[in-house]
Length: 69
Image 1 (cartoon, helix red, strand yellow):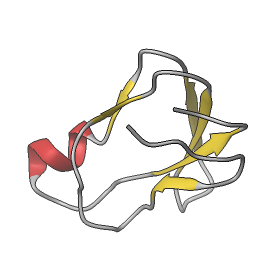
Image 2 (tube, one colour):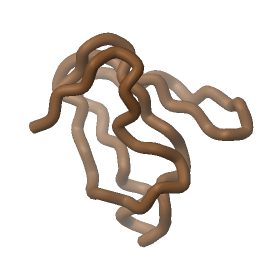
Image 3 (cartoon, helix red, strand yellow):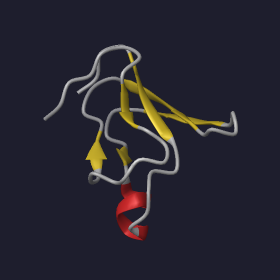
Image 4 (cartoon, helix red, strand yellow):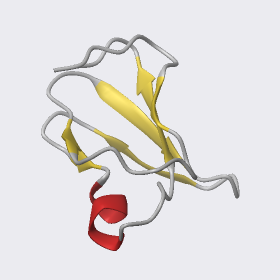
């Protein structure tokens, strides 16, 4: 398990995949370098799956909004 504080990036766009994660508590912001903002991640949501399935780098940045687990 990993805890993150407000503003901490959990996945950085362009970085190698580290696995699939599930948000257990809190909310995360998901953004793309183009400036596009995707729907927020909420408790129970998975992220990192695209990179794992494609074997590529992260396609978006996931940032903690408040404390998350």
